[in-house]
Length: 226
Image: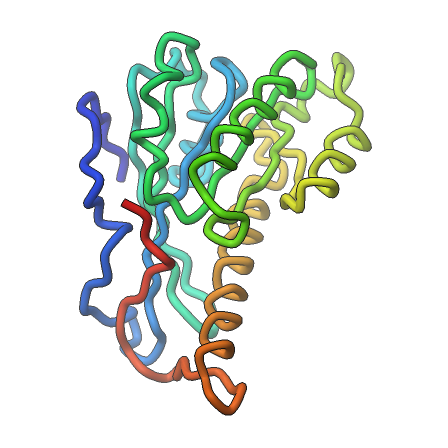
C-alpha cells in the first residue's frame, strides 16, 4: 500500500514503538522497522520502492516531501514489516529531511551509477546519518541504482564497494527498471536487522544465550530514537 504524505511525520511514528500482535501463523515474532530512502533527485528512489512493493516499474516525477510504502516479509524465524519512507532528493528539502529519518532502523543511500555526482551526494547523506545515529543504531546500505544504464556507467562497481567497505555499509547495485537485485537489497537489510536483534538478545542474556524465543508471538522493534 502506498500513500502520499505531504505533511511532516510525527516523531512518534509506528516504527518507533512496540505494539502487541502476532505474525500470520501466530508462531513467529514480528518486527516493525522504519526504512528511509535517501539520495539525490532522479536516482530512482521512488522507482525502487514502487518496484519492491508493487512488483512493477514506473517512471516517477520528483517526490514532494515524502512518500510512504509498507511491505511485509515472512521469513522462517520472524515476520518483518517494513515502513518505507521515500524522501525528496531536491536540495530545497535537504534541511528538513532529518525529520523524516528520525527513528529509522535502516537507510538506503541511493546513487545513479551513470552519474558520479550522485555518489558524492550519497556520501553527504551518510554524514547526516552519522550525526543522528550511533554506528550500531541503524543499518545502512549503499545502493548503486540504474544498472540498466551500465553502458553509461560513471561509477565503477569497485568504487562503490570500496566506499561501503570502509564505512561498514551493505552494498549492492540494482535496477528498478529491470528488477535487478531490488528484492535482494531489502532482504539483506531484513537479515542484518534480525541478526542485530539476536546479538542484542544474546548480550542481554546473563548466560550468553539468546533470550528471544523465536516461537513466541509478539511485535518487537529496533531501538527507537526520538
